Image (tube, rainbow, N blue to C red; front, top):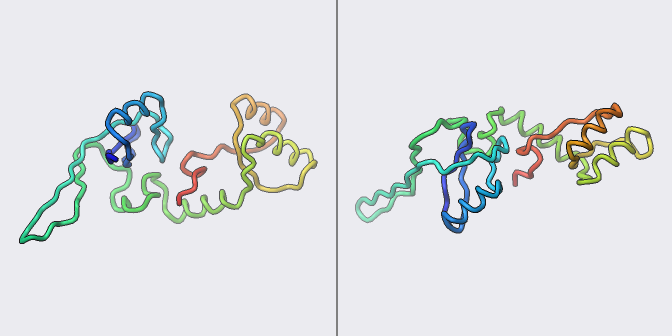
Length: 156
């Protein structure tokens, strides 16, 4: 495996693991490589350096040195949530709220309608809907909100 330092057009930095440079290129061309913070598919390998310094027979741990492109958050880079640019406590509460919903998957439009028309018990749900399905739900007066990709994924 090769670990590449990646960056999106919005300036978010993250790493990706690939079998080879050709594998990265193939996945990137197929729009399979996306930014975990903003879901941008315009992702490129950014320069980075791995430095090993040996002194008196002791090898230092590898250190990543940023070469270009601004990082979304500097002090909080150690946390996975720092790339979103949101305060950690706020992001934790958002993820908790998402975890407390029922994932109904592709049945989202159907379940949202059933809840709206009192045909199913009221509860918090999440799932997927096509743009046409989402428009139809809005036309029926059914309130919902789209989740950004970084909230829809399980962080663990």
